Length: 246
Image (cartoon, rainbow, N blue to C red):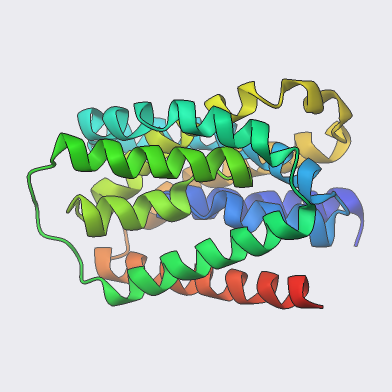
């Protein structure tokens, strides 16, 4: 399979994940860029931030129109993570690629298990301190591991802040966008070294597929979305841990 076809296929999968699940884009994009397209871990995490930022903005617009974005909660959550995201992005360039890969996999696995064990949420009043604390932690992870944060934001919004799954999906896209932009600001110097002949079609396919993912989400129940998200994360985490150990 040609590199272009691989990039388009992987981009479509990432777009569907972000549009339907409000996360999982980076946790899928990073291994796809590394194992299918030959990017180094540092290149892959930077490229994933570009891809996920642009795709998340597209998906966010659709979810906002459907009324599934909790703007106040999302902005507070995201704002608390901006500085930690920038600090994490600066630190990432100093760490070994294998360590970043292993850390990425462990966090993905932990988030997946939590999602499988957490029952669908009932509406709850969001506490600002709790939202800010969770957002700061997520921002640090976003910058360090080059992820938009949706794969951790969705479990946090559901399990910690009590949002329903559909609201968590839409709100996580807002968080992803803000955190990814903050992390990218610390990696501006690495953007010129990316293979844009691969990144551009990858991003284009992801943006187009995000619209289909949003429509798909309206046809699937909240609990089913939650289980699908968790199982996808668990599978990717297991694969990446295996690769890191070999």
